[in-house]
Amino acid sequence: MKRGGEQQSAQGFTIVETLIVLAVTGSLFVMAALTINGRQNKTDFQVGVRGLKQQIQQIVNETVSGYYPNNTDFSCQAGAGNNVKITDSSSNTQGSNSECVFGGKALALSVQNPTKYTVYSMAGRRLDSSNADVSDASKAWLTVIQKSTIVSNINNGLEYVGANVDGTGFTSDEGVAVAFLSGFAGSGTSQQAGVQQLNLHNFSRPWPANTQSDSDAARSWLDTEATTSAAYPKVSKGIGLCFKSGGTDQSGLITITNGLEVTLDIKNGTTCGA
Image: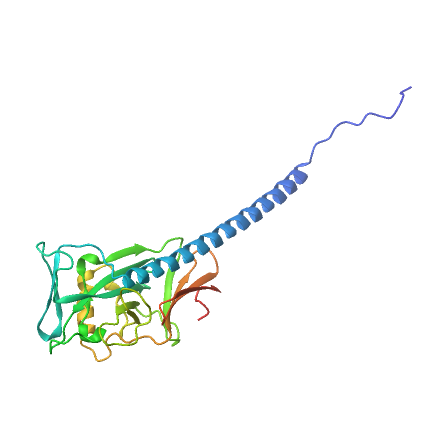
C-alpha cells in the first residue's frame, strides 16, 4: 500500500505559454524603448533649440560690440554709383579702410539648406555723395566682407521652416536674412545700447538659397538690393524664425524683437502654430 499522496511529475511551460511570455516581455521592452527614445528626442530638441537661441543672441552681442572676424586681406573703397567695392589686398590691415565702416551683420537661412545658417559681416561707405556722414543703412550701400562669411550647422536634428516678419504670417519662400545694422549718424531710432547702436532690419526681397555659402553671390545680391527704393526696411515689431524638431512633433519659435532681445517659445507641431 502506498503511503501519502501520489507523486506528481514536474511540468514546464507549454509552447503557447512561452510564446505568450515572450510576446508580453517584447511588448514591454518596445514600450520602454519608445518611452526612453521619446524622452531623448525631446531632450535633444530642448538642448538644440535653446543652444540656437543663445547662438543668435551671441551674434547680436558681437555686432553690438563692433566685432567681426580679424581679416587682413581686404580693402574697402567707395565706388562709382555709390556702391562699395571690397577687394582682396594683403597690404591692408583691419581698421585701415578709412573709406568704409563696419555696418553690421546679416543672418541668412534657407529652406533649401535647412540645417545651416550663414552670418555675413557687412561694410558700407562712411560718407554720402556730398561727403557728409551717412545717416542710415540704405545710404551706406552695405555689402558683404567676403572673408568674414561664416557658415554654421544647426544641430540636434533641428531644421529651419520659415520666418514671420512683423506678424505678416509665416513664409518659407526661398530664404530670409535678418540684419542687425548700424544706426549710423543721425538715425535716432537705434534700439540697443552699446558700442554699436543697432537697428533690426530685413530685406525687401527673399534671400536666395544659392547665396547661403557663396559670399560672392551674397555680395552681388546685396549690391542689387541696395539699389531698390525699399532697401533694408526696418522691422517695427520683430522677426520670428521657426525651427522644427527632427524627432518630436514640436517646433521652436525664436523671435528677435525690435529691441534686439532674442526669445524662445516652444510650440506643438512642426510649423510654430502657423
